[in-house]
Image 1 (tube, rainbow, N blue to C red):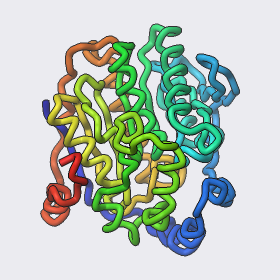
Image 2: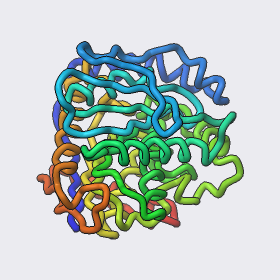
Image 3: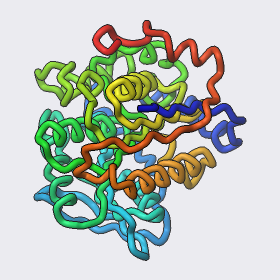
Length: 345
């Protein structure tokens, strides 16, 4: 099975250059002060605005609280969205820019308000995500995809592993934005990109370990339900990953994609230069964000339309082939086995 990978080299937009300067000057010093989950929850509200023409309403699905994002017209597919926040903070309302963006691109989106650590450590968030997905998959004939960012991206991957292991219906496809897939925080990009990633780079040396231990609550961090990169990915549905080349979480996506490729999973990996953590949420501001959310929505809808990508799929869908545009220096870095923790080489 072919694993498609594309690393894009294009001139950054003026908006992206200005945003990165602002992140370096204003967000980075605040992120460096985060030492506890309460510190993260106290960071200033910087949520981007929700798109116009989308209705948001609270609801319970599978007994779990959350929020629907619905646009006018008939949706082609359903989406179970799992937000980020280090498993300890944030909520669906903070991600209306993304869930609303997907709603305007053909999805009826339910953002799960899963329980957070430290009040509700592992496996509470995974239990909530599984309850919601089962209810969505059993209540509508349309295909259901799963999407998540950062910690929510890791949770989406863990959800697929649980559903597969339980022989339950799987998502038609998955999309992971800047996912946190390795809670051991052992990959090389944690160190090499800590000064380049202005959003979570300042937390790479301490706070991320604290978030991981708070969430795991004594569970082995190499447990695949906690760190999906350590699990077998065989049998997972088509999965799209987006990550920034300068992110501390870059190698999580690279390792996940490589493991999935070896195990026959359809994987499409996008590594973009210069972009910040979970940049598609800024699609109203950044041309790079619009391109990413447009591309991810198109890939998800295409995967959901393939019979082999249905939730009950047993066969693999053919991989998306993309042109490789990979610079030699970055190629060597990403292919260097030394960047991986020993357990995932």
